[in-house]
Image 1 (tube, rainbow, N blue to C red):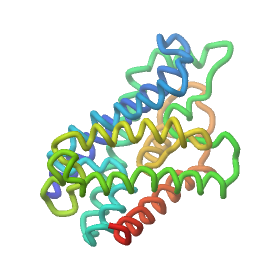
Image 2: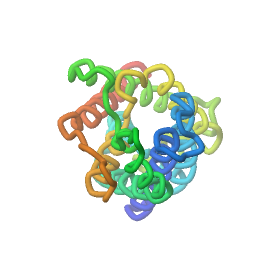
Image 3: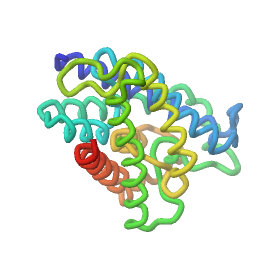
Length: 253
């Protein structure tokens, strides 16, 4: 895979992921949205469908990582680290772009939310935050949830009964052209439903940091803080989780 393919695939795929994910959070959160207060199950499925759309779109170009934690896990498994910076930079650009697109879709609702009597905070539309602020507990939650994501993804790529195996290409192949991405999408839904309660399950540094930067820069009325004091946890936790998942996979498989 060329550098251009990786850049294009990861930017487009991650942008689609965040468009769906931030979009469903906006739909459930903002005033004058038809999905207002639809709840956590809707959010979990919205993010899962975002993975489905983004990964299937990006897979032919870049392998469809869409997540620095996945990229790190793949690199630990394959021993190929040369393209890791390009993957991560592309994912960050795509995540920031997807957040901008979600903002544009819900622009009128963001304006109405600012004028509402009970205006809702907007950071949670873009990035994660803990229900109980405990750095150690929050970090452990993100690490475990990310291992629960990356370890099955690596195993899916080795399972001959799922799709047709990894896509050929240097540091790329984690998905087959069959049902692997569908299963990963359902896996993300399951993680959201089961493990997302404590922190909102970032499980993806780009998914959290890119939109958090976008939130800080966008002219959202009464947007409040971007909570930079917490921002390191949804970056460090998933990266550690991806690394651990790769090490466990290498040891066990």
